[in-house]
Length: 620
Image (cartoon, rainbow, N blue to C red; front, side, top):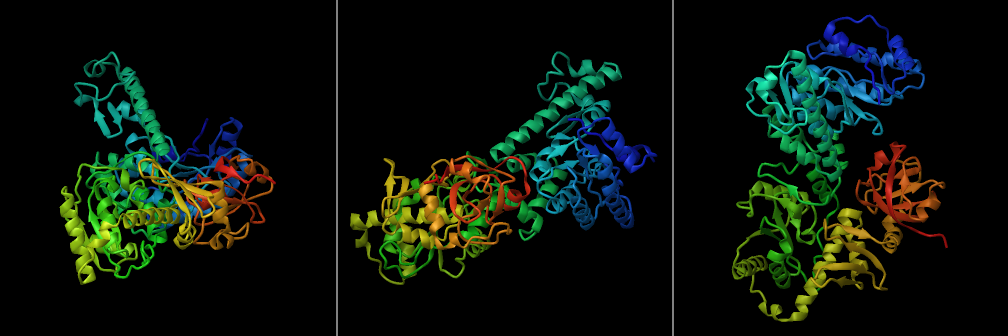
């Protein structure tokens, strides 16, 4: 791909460049570039607010003539505005309204040169939500590999820079952790094909051009390797984890990182970033002792739990629960079912209305969700929770709608007898009377509690990951049954008539629907109240529904994937990586699958796979 600049940055570096907007765009078209760039107005950080605003306005006025002059050549539409966040947003809105192919962020090289990363990241966040989601975002002049993970995590898609050569001219070597000067080296800090066979001392003694060449090739190796590492992290759902690790390499980056994580969750830019993350991923998650629980990739499941999770029925496993309270088990290391399952069952046998919760580094977790990723897959140095902060517990109870209930903490002990005594003491204190320990002797009671726990888990997972009202699930499972594995885990979930509707996943604790399960969900009251095709979708409960046009219907029924460009509407509750129902324009179920994007992207994108279809409803 050949991409050309318009001369704006050259004007910033070398002074005025005498060239007109239409003239330079036509020239780029005539030489056959793949992507051209219009002549924008570079807004430096040291300019006045009036100059920033004039730059935004002039750039926007040039957009129409530039697009006409491009004669169909894809065109870059730069975003300007200096340090004024609202001007940056205005620029994004003005340029986003024009049919540009890509939107570079302009005027940011001085910020990177001065290490003003906090302001840089704020700009990216500000414009992201005002640009059409289907258009790539490009960072003009960003070529230091240290910045790649942060920019990509915030939504940047493309980079361009001559940094690998410019740094080499000054005898500097790029690394993902920062910059190293050749004069300070006795050994190479990393293996490199370009540096193989020569020592730092030998390179120091080379002529300037030769030294620049060898260092530039090494810098380019590092740059490409870091981009590959970032792409792999995106594929694995770990780009935020990589960005956090990189933030520890530089104080200014750490400050900028904290400015992102510390933003209010009501911030529209942050909330959009959070909702675009996958709720779950496979594999362990590195979690340092100072890692923030509000990191966007971790915050998404917390906010979703707040919106969708509800306490189990107060009647409990025997239909006679009365004294509701919250029992928090303070144990950091998963799998929790191995360490506290017996104590949880004892708690429920003694008080069927109790709500067992687990204190985790990411916040309180209902015991029904004890095996879900990321909670159960954190890789930490600590194995104990230690003292629990009262404010933290209060905030978590408030988040889950349990703030009005009595609460007790049960600290983990290696001695099972000690923990059982703590459970007994908690129940005794909450019931304000003697407890009936004879209930523990009946094995039928133990089996009833186990069955109830399995149903609670299924109800909560369908609520969390499929947005099903748990009342519907409890009703469906009241006479249904579970197929169990030899290790006591639920394999399949069956309704009263033996229909297999779903299966829990052991890899990430999620849940997978069957075609019959999709039909069951579609028949629920909340699923029939769907938004009409062509609407933006605003239904807050029930499984997410995507309507597709008639051209896609026969392929979906055969189990083929849904592609962008064939979607008529998508519910606002649609999340990437989560199940959704696929309907035709009449609202008839024709399949189900896993969405790859959120609702906005579902409707905006025109190419690529939108939904990976798991199964289709065949024509009779």
